[in-house]
Length: 640
Image (cartoon, rainbow, N blue to C red; front, side):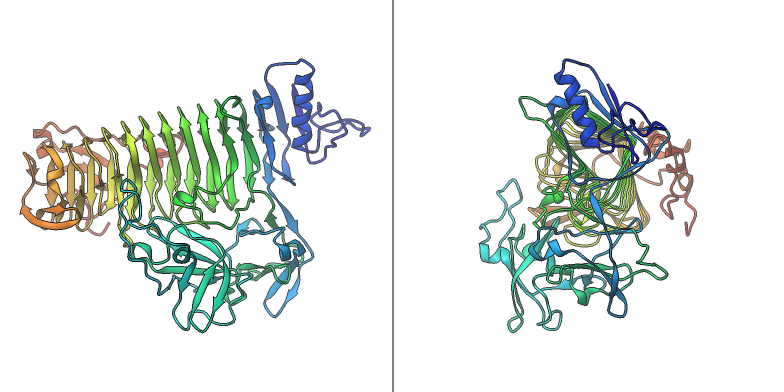
């Protein structure tokens, strides 16, 4: 059962031929929906087995989401060999006209009644930035919310926020004014580890008070964070390439780049939240569906607070209650929501895919026995900075050989049990938000983090940023054989217990911090911790066993800070346990060789060298495994 779809096809034809015949009486279908229905008809007539929908090269604009259900089990939807198939979940904007001296506009009459509302636009293949205020950075508002956060385990806020507190924000005089158009304006309110994008119900310019059209996820001012951005107002058009949706006038307004001709521009706005939706039920899942070799772009998100990890938003590929389904060799970019999202699934496999320039998460998978391997995930969270590169939940997931970078929040996050997170390459995470990490796991048991590389994460304030972070209720987890490079807090552990951190190499420029607030019964053994500055260990008493670690501080300072909850309650000096203090004498750190020289103190303790040569994508890791390290250890070259 093979059917073909082509840009020069016709839904009245049989769909059995790859190309139209010369007489123009038969050939491929024009739409995916028609091909899906043809397969369904054959199965209803009694045919069984696998079916294929093969798409010929070209651009396809979907008027609606293609939904696949249990009756479509065993279907493969794939690009023709060697051909590029690009699907768009939107429509082209036409009829562009001059709009003032610098701008151009195209009519969107459905926007007046919010029958067509969107927050992303693609022009000539580029994810365009929305008009924003301030032009750079963030505004600081005046609203406070001083209720203590009791942790997720502790039930969240000590007192539940009121509707008034979730929908009211006061701003500084001069930041905004009577000109603010509440019909168009949207506000992103920043919290600690997530954000809320909301509309406006009212604006009192006399008292500088904004009322939101829907509640934010946390009250403005929560966690002491008082930052916000205003989007989608004409006053925010500060540079070429920006745009806004003028709902009152029913038009999209765009500022062209230099030499960009809007009479010939290819501008696309989204009409759907998902391009593909695999939707089963718990009792009747959709099974064995494969999506392969396709490129997907342009989807939208509704106006609402996304929550942790922008979880509220759907994916360009969405799977619910799917079994043994597969996304392979997909490229998902320029989408407003998540790249690939699967929940309630089992045996889902995402491999050899790329997600980039996505509004929310790159990939989110919930269920049993999932595999996320050999993918390239980068530049996520373009609209929602709480987005996570790869987010897993459930049991027995494998996340391996992925390359993840340029994420505003965490690169890999996990909850659940018995996951394996191995041989991933992560860098430039945590670029906007706080209290996250290169790899962050929480509410989990039996998770293994092994032979990963995490490098170049800069702390931007708040609750901080880490390389490897074991948070609330992480128990019986293993962090083994990993490398942390140029991350000042390589290991952070909070409200976690009975975990083992073994055989890792943590190389820090500046002060290194190992932190264990409200944690207990840890084991740290055979690790190498090397810093150009001081090494500080917060709550060292949380570690029941310090065994055979090597510490090297360029400033000759190793300090333990006892904590009472989160407050310092005393200090101690020196390396804990039977650790040795001295240069670990790596063979060639500058070129990624983490073996030890014959006279290294690590060898006297029986520490085996780490092997992270396989971290990252299998086809690319050879070029990505070596990263120069400046000053840390005698083998480094000054100034690298």
